[in-house]
Amino acid sequence: MSYPDTIRTQHLELVDHAGKIRAALGVDATGSPSLVFLDSEGKSRATLHLRSDGAPQIDFFDKARNGHITLGVTSEGGFGLAVFNSSHEQRAAFGLNSEGMPYLILLDSLENPKLSLSVDSDGNPSVGLFGPKRKKESVLGLFGSKKQGGAFITVDSNGAPAIALLDSESKTRAMFNLEVDGRPSIAFSDRSEQIRFGIGSLPNGHLGINFYDSAGNGRITLGLSPDGAGVIVFVNSALKPLAVIGVESDGTPKIELLDSAGKVLFKAP
Image 1 (cartoon, rainbow, N blue to C red):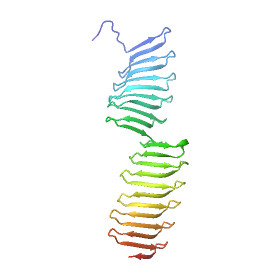
Image 2: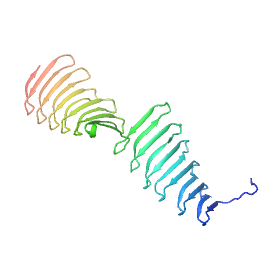
Image 3: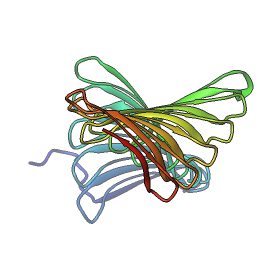
Image 4: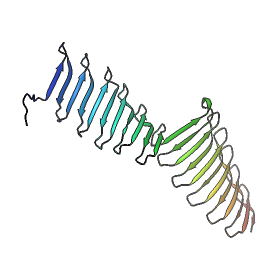
């Protein structure tokens, strides 16, 4: 359908009094329309166009056409604003997802998300803090005055959470972990960050308490099996058991003493 006084063209330019192009309206080779605004030096500073998926987008550029802001609508119906630095690296994003829920994302120089804030469709808020290697590892750091002492709360890429407590010298002195399968563990370390005491469980259901020497070698182990049998094992510096004291699941006590070569010196019953 045509109308009176209609101009049909694929490209239209508006110029100033000096003949410089200051705005251009056109359709590119893919059929997508765009409107471009240029400064007095002929550099495009703002554009409005439709992407190949039909979603609209507006871009604002700085004088050097490096840093810029992009405002657009996604093909899924989301709406967002992205901020890029002078190296064309995206550093921030803010908007609404396809469900209309808000989000804010801050990124590092490699465009890896480092901080995210969002609200889901049920109204639940979420905060994500990501570690140096990303891998969807969340890290939350809490520090005292002048960063002396503190705590880290992390969730690795497999979803396993952990809490680390640091002393005034930023040495890790305690760790609380939960494996992906739900098994908990606790470890306490000395000032050299060497684990000296640990409590944990194995996949087969055995529970254990371990005492370690300054070299990190387990010297005393207290264990409990799923059937109720308990045992205490004493080990020398060569990691050879010297004494085993326990109670079977039926209540029968047992004791075994060995020399450093593993020879039984005493056994009862």
